[in-house]
Image: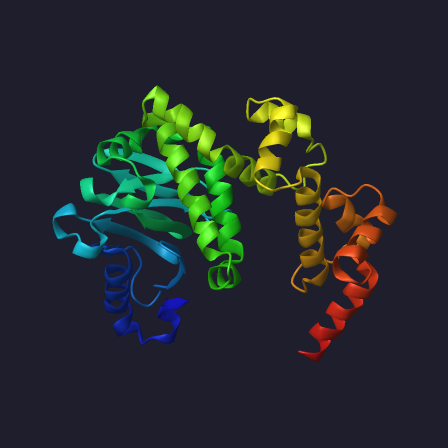
Length: 324
């Protein structure tokens, strides 16, 4: 949902509108806009996935500050994670004296009940973030707080960053669909695993690893769908388990590993064939890019899944684009 677009406002009203929007949505107490009002541009979108709220903030150089003393009561128990979007510069993150520059694979963690924080970027930038009540994580405040300066050492960090970007890419549809609650639960479990991977007791870390293993495996698969060497052996090795354990884990979760991968790859190829805002590629090139080395096999699977061939789908998509 679009909350703010300063391009639609008079220059004199833009900064006040930004202050009001970020205070209301994220509890931000101070905004330091680094461009004059005539060049200022900000756009803020917000989506709800069950108990989780996702934010997309983009625009000219800025610094947002949230003070613990001025925190809004309804946000006081929230935990937030933020990252910079691919191709949109580097963010500057600070929390209780800890400072870090964030790229697309890095995350900033903020336990709102125990920390003030600031975040921003020079020139132009774009960040995605989410916020959730700490009760959803089931972790003590001290554990979350201890993880703040350690997140960069976690093997889960890049995985969760990829997961957030995947959610963000189709946030309008996913947040409104029946899968929203399940996606929120998966995101919360990955966040819990992230925190415990660097700050939990050993026994607690082992328990969290067991409980979140399937979630981490599926998030890894989603992030590496286009890798040509994505095999059960590689997936098992990355997660420190045997191939036999991997298959048993998927079976217990009601998932066929191969069919899950093929289904997601077909979805990706189908979406690319329908896209009108990309440099066009041949059907064979799209198939290869999504892990189908045999064009005939790709055509058979595509027809079985969607009732049309890739060529028919491409023609239909082009016709729809021409009619629009």
